[in-house]
Amino acid sequence: MLLHLSAPHRLPLPSPFKFLACTPNPTNTDPLLRPIGFAPLRPLLPLLASPASVTDAGLRFREKLLFIEHDLGVDSSHALSLNPSLRSAPLSALRSSADALRSFGLLPADVSRVFAMYPSLLTCNPSADLLPVFRFLLGPAAIPFPDIRKAVVRCPRLLVSSVPDQLLPALRFLRRLGFVGRHRITCRTTVLLVSSVETTLLPKLEYLRGLGFSHQETRCMVLRSPGLLTFSIENNFKPKVEFLLNDMGRDVSELRDFPQYFSFSLEGKIKPRHQLLEDNRLWMPLSEMLKVSDGDFTCRLLEMRLSSIDA
Image (cartoon, rainbow, N blue to C red; front, side):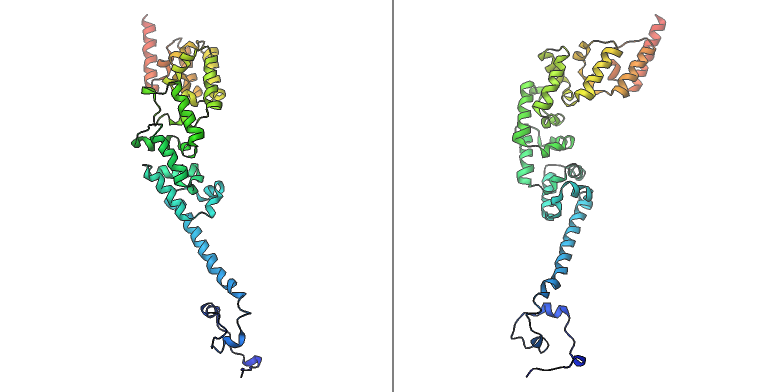
């Protein structure tokens, strides 16, 4: 016989935790559960369980943010804005990417810098995305293992470049140009490998040839100063050539003997030192004018002034 209770004497309902602990079973003998029934309670179970699942997800996300900020030293908000996949990626994926970089000699500060520049690498597949680049550097590019870290630190973009579409074509082009033997690609010049042959390397070679240099002269210039292939035509080559010809009154032939001219700051070094020579009515080759330190340049300038006075 069912127990009938009036509203004022109705027994208190059990707490939600008791419902979560009970196994739905119509034969349950609990006198409090049997009259209430299980059908009305089943829709409540997901609602009662959802706070725990939400809390677990929040804790996992917080743990991931702490790993990015504390362990990797990367701005998590910046990383999330550039790589939304971080929100759903498991923490183990991030650890795998970091471990892959460390296994090739990168220091914690290096790993932090790489991930800060390219947050997409945090959620990459190390086997498919990172290892092919390292195999390329060790294999075709012939970079010694101790120099791998230096190569990546100088040019982190290597890690986000396609081996078949970018790195291999650039290496083949550079070797045909003469980057072999003592001029071979090293950890100092791997930055050239991320340059497009068609849109970056060839236009710069054509510009130098347009100044009147032969193919062989241009080739020798870039082998002596590989940085030429990384400089902007509009922001570096053109203004410095114009200053050399118009303001300094020199000939472009000097660039053949000293292509490093393009690696010096126009405003910070070339113009000030030229002005000092002009003020003292003195002249010196580009290499003597630019390669020395400020102190040595001043000493050389004084020596020249004294020599002119004695003469």
